[in-house]
Image 1 (tube, protein in one colour):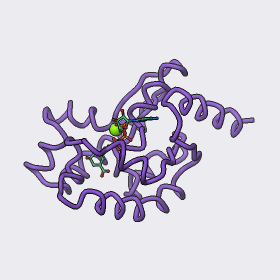
Image 2: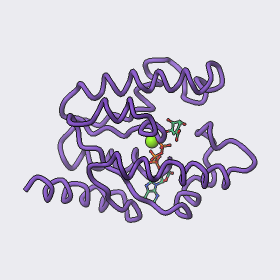
Image 3: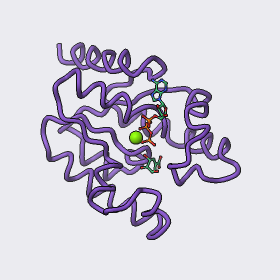
Length: 161
Ligand SMILES: Nc1ncnc2c1ncn2[C@@H]1O[C@H](COP(=O)(O)OP(=O)(O)OP(=O)(O)O)[C@@H](O)[C@H]1O
Ligand SMILES: O=C(O)C1=C[C@@H](O)[C@@H](O)[C@H](O)C1
Ligand SMILES: [Mg+2]
């Protein structure tokens, strides 16, 4: 969460001439409400089902750059949806930078709590090993969004050679 998928994804789509889809926005459009409202009204489990449905639909559409939701790839069923059809890219960003980036955020329901820093640490430690093993490509996301987008394009080129 907060590693820059949405921001870098937009740049990557522009540079690669692909259409950009942000998974959270896709879910919000289908549901007609914000992610935070879905969590509030129906709970996280219902959100995860909607997210899984979005993964299945987006994995079946060619030519996209997809910025996944921050928790989507913690579920094997979502990794399976994309595996072999798309390249899964991990933006690797140290926890202290993520904390800095999300310091003033009010839109991510899992972080709206008094012990926000500790919640981020726990999510980071639990998720990183899963994400490292799910990723086809891991790129540092510490640089500017544009430089990171180019690093992804280079990594894909290198892998395809
Ligand atoms: N490379 C970057 N350098 C500096 N700030 C960045 C960078 N990438 C993203 N940010 C900032 O960090 C915040 C989180 O970025 P973004 O929304 O793209 O993350 P995300 O990975 O899509 O998060 P989520 O998992 O919640 O969807 C935003 O305020 C964004 O402007
Ligand atoms: O990291 C997460 O679990 C989440 C990240 C956001 O992108 C949203 O998908 C939602 O807030 C959950
Ligand atoms: Mg995002």
